[in-house]
View 1: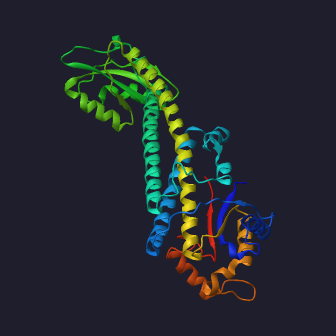
View 2 (view 1 turned 120 degrees about the horizontal axis):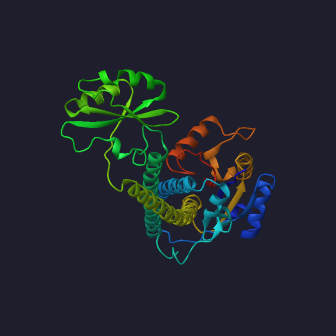
Length: 392
C-alpha cells in the first residue's frame, strides 16, 4: 500500500519537557505506532519580514506548492509512458540518488543551493524559477520523443498494415503501370475481399472510358485485394469517385526508382532517432523527477515555517515532524492529533461532548481554509500546522 505523509508543526510549549527530541517522542506516542511512524522534519530558521509580507508569502507558497505537485505528477506520467515496468520506473524515481520516500524521511534543507540567509521572497522566487525550468525541459524533450515515436509508428504501419494503408513500394511491379502515356493511366484500388467478385463484374462500367479487361490482381491479404485498372485520364477523377462510393479504396502511387531502399533508410533513421531520443527523455525525466520533488519538499518546508510563524509567533521554538502512515490509517493519525492538540485553536474550533467540531465552527473552519489558513484550499482548517502529501 502506498504511503501517505503528513508534516506537522507545533509550538515547543505544547510539550512538558521543552526539549525538541522529547517533544518528537511525545508526538509519536500521541499518534501511536499503530497509526504511523513519526520522525523529525528539519526546517531551518529563516529571515522574517513584516506580517503583511508573511501573509502574502503564505499565499504565494500555497500556489507554488500546487504548481510543484502538478509538475511532479506530469514528470511521473512522462516517465511511466516509457517505463511501463514498475520496477524500472521506481529505479528512475530517485532524488539525489535516494528513493523518493527515503529522501523525504531524511530531508535536510539544502543550505548551499538555497541559502537560508536569503529572504523568504528570494527563496520563493528561486524555487519558482527552478520548477518552471524543470517543467519546460521535461515537456520539450518528451514532446520531441512522442513526435519521433509517432513518425516511427506511421512508418511501421505503412509496412505492416493491410493493402488499403500499407506502402505499395515493395508490392507493385512497375511493369503493371501504364507510364508516360498522354491519354491513359493506371489506378490501384484496394477492394475488400468480400467485394472482389462485384468489383470484377462492374469496374468497366463505373465511369466512361475504362479500358476493357484491364484489371489485374496485384496482391491480396486477409482483408483486401489490390487491383490495377487502366482508364483514360479524362475520366480518372470520376472513376476514383465511383470507387469511393462503393467503399473501395483508391491508392495513390507513383513508381520511383530506389523507392524501396529509401523507405528502409527512413525506417532505419527513425528507429535510431527514436532510440536516441528515448534515452535522452529518460535522462531528462530522471533528472526532472529528482529536481521537481526536491523543489516541492523545500517549498513544503517554507510553508511549514511561514504558517508556524503566523500561528505561533516568536520566539521560533517549534517542533516539526513527519508522520508516515497510509491512506487507510491517515484519518486515525489525524484524529489522534486533534484529540491531543485541538486546544491550540482556542475558540476557533469548539467541540461537543463527543469531541466533534460543532456545526457552526465547522462552517467557519471551511471559510478559514478558503481564506488561506491551515492546510490550504480544499482542506479543513486545523488547530495546528498540518500538511498532507503523497507521491504519484
